[in-house]
Image 1 (tube, rainbow, N blue to C red):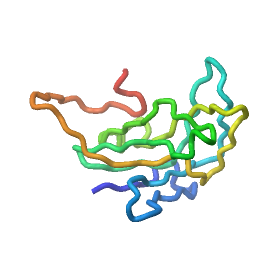
Image 2 (image 1 turned 180 degrees about the vertical axis):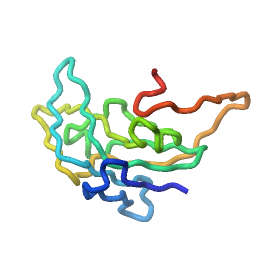
Image 3 (image 1 turned 45 degrees about the horizontal axis):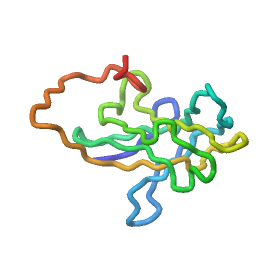
Length: 149
């Protein structure tokens, strides 16, 4: 079964468990876990990681997607990786307990102030398929970006 939990280190930060706003909504609204400034874009700037204070469990043949809100680009929010894909084995990893972040650039002409509790994106859970001759056997050894190590 899928579920959201508060990530280790965020238990006393009044993090809200995500909800869907309507019965037919695919996405769970995700809030910022703390106040943060996303500086306006300039060449060479790195994306801003916005903590959620959350981790999410899903089945072995599932993953979840981090998606921008439809109003995000209008406000200047541009996801650095277009769509974030979080594998099921990210949950509870030793580096960060599975805490997931949203990674944004600010494409407006001014800094954007994000307040704790502002909805910053959505999570959609989905199944995935593998090919007939798939022989993946590795185990995750870390958190964010660990498959590039």
